[in-house]
Image (cartoon, rainbow, N blue to C red):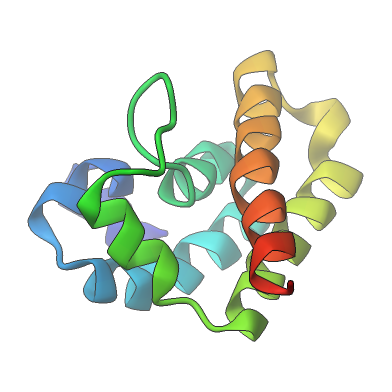
Length: 116
């Protein structure tokens, strides 16, 4: 997380500067760091959410990012969300709880669609 914070730019803001494959490459560091340092869980959650208030998954960048995940990688993101809900929920503020709900909607629904 120190590497991310040294840049002075939140990971979700870097999306516009990184190719979806490059951002996907760096995503595990955010997920692990968010679990190890819960004060940065919002950084991890924002990294797995489409940008904007409506969280639309129809943009070209998001589609390329999302479609590049293998089934196992999708399952890992879903496991991250399940663990975060189970272990951190009571310590999270309302905004982070909403981010988890939004991410579950995006990732759990897309996981079941990819398994059909």
